[in-house]
Length: 191
Image 1 (cartoon, rainbow, N blue to C red):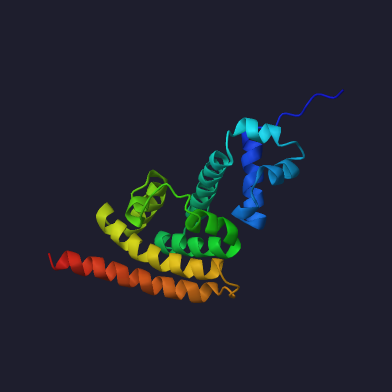
Image 2: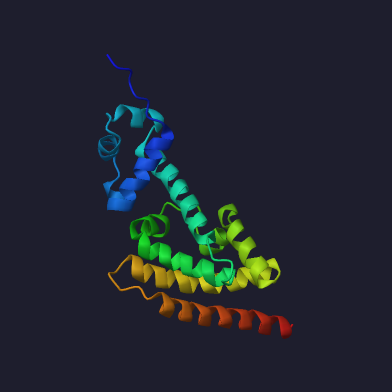
């Protein structure tokens, strides 16, 4: 008899992300994972004591993928605008993963301000701070304005079958960015 193939947690998480990417969070269950991995449900239920635990681990994996995607900006582009466009593009290219991250209730943070101050977002804010040449509180303020705009734009695309026009998105994002920078600078000058 051939040796039994060991299914690792990493393989299970990869399969979970694959299922969510293809069919959405509602399609993720032990049977679907077993079918994807060509195994029984036993290795899945051994690696993760509950499906809830698995979904939370999958959320962390997708969050990591999302952060890597955001930070992959061309060097010639303003990092803040590049990250904003990547945020929108992620929603266009990966609508089910986007909905899992931002519309499923699996985020550990309870509100937007907690999300901005999370350790996971720190690399994004670091890149933006360097690109803007502003201190952290000002960068955070600019980011908040841009994040609200980009999230609205991304959500519209992730939840509808609209045609994505990157040049239009870039123009709108740049207006929001310039307005946010001007507002932060004006607040500073009025102090």
